Length: 130
Image (cartoon, rainbow, N blue to C red; front, side, top):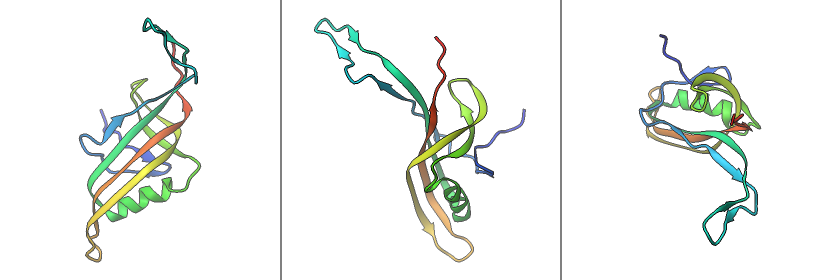
């Protein structure tokens, strides 16, 4: 079976770190959700969105730039990824948040980032089947 890679629009990114693909689904509930004095839940879930924390270490500055060109300041971008809810590779619209990068080599032609990390969050909620 062929190895799959994350894609941001038309750019295939290098492989993330071993711990660089962390699931972080976000659940949004009704505003009056809470518990009764007996501990019973009241209110309900409105929707859940798919989100992932991504991280690369020792990544070339050129790869960092290529990824940033496709995610920074964008209303949305196409993200080809492994959906942890459906256990399938698919493309969906996402947005990026909390983008952080640090560099350890600024030698001309050999620039390297110590780390690139950010969170991607789906534009659309998960289609959760009951």
